[in-house]
View 1 (cartoon, helix red, strand yellow):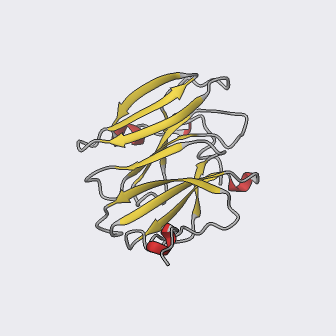
View 2 (spheres, helix red, strand yellow; view 1 turned 45 degrees about the horizontal axis):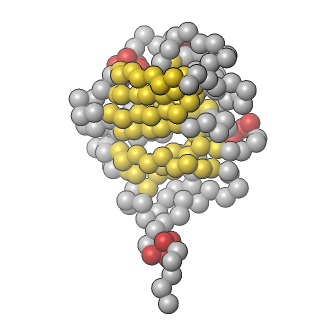
View 3 (cartoon, one colour; view 1 turned 60 degrees about the vertical axis):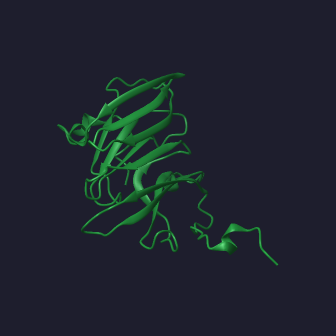
Length: 187
């Protein structure tokens, strides 16, 4: 008998028991130091505030096996986000996300940069410096072109916005006001 279950046909499961983790976002990262990895970011639907973060799992064997998902420091209260690797930039990953741990707040829209295969994100910047609690940021999309330019699109109060930046802009003159979101204040 042939099974119609794709997991019986060689697909692997990312095990995340009772975490409420959904909407996988896959990123292929080439890195000379850590080796190539397939990274899976997940958002949490957990009611528990301590679990309201983007989670990360990785596979070093092309997706056959996966590590248990671990919480990043990037907040997420069941909001869409997107990640992308920067081509030719050894281990750099960007994540576009709503930078809030509060369910009643839909902003700011921030971009985070990692240089260690998306494990840590030491740089986070808001895309718009003026932020109001009544703004609703949603539907983030990010892609990176071969020249290293990061192209982002998102919805702000029903209007689609587009911007492009380079990693150096994210790193820029970073200070506590680089973001008005909840990162980096959460542990």
